[in-house]
Length: 89
Image 1 (cartoon, rainbow, N blue to C red):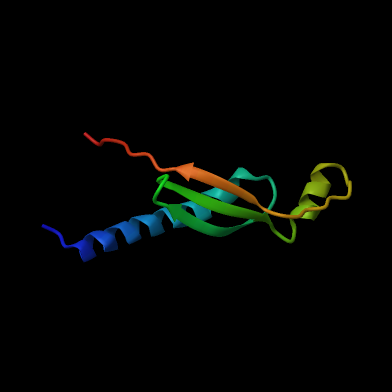
Image 2: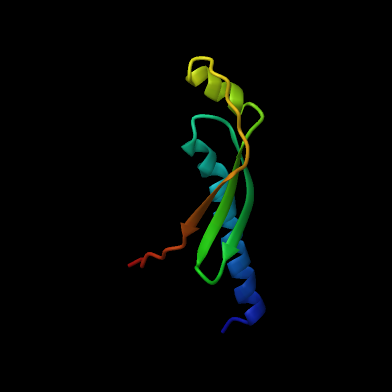
C-alpha cells in the first residue's frame, strides 16, 4: 500500500511529464514562433491550460507569409486540454 506522499509524488511527476510534452508539441501547431508561457492544471475540470504568446520573430514571420503586410500582435492565446484516460488491456 502506498502512502499519500508517494501518491502525491507520482501525480506531480505525471503532471510535470504533461507540461514537458505540451512545451514541446504546442509550438509545432503554429507556422510562426511562439513562446509557451504558463501551464496550469485545474483539478476541478481535470484539464490543463496553456498560455501561448507570439515570439519576438512572429510578426516578421507572419508578415513574410502574408506578402509583407504590417502585422501587429498583442495579447496571448490560451488553450485548455481536457485530461482523458485510456484503459490499457
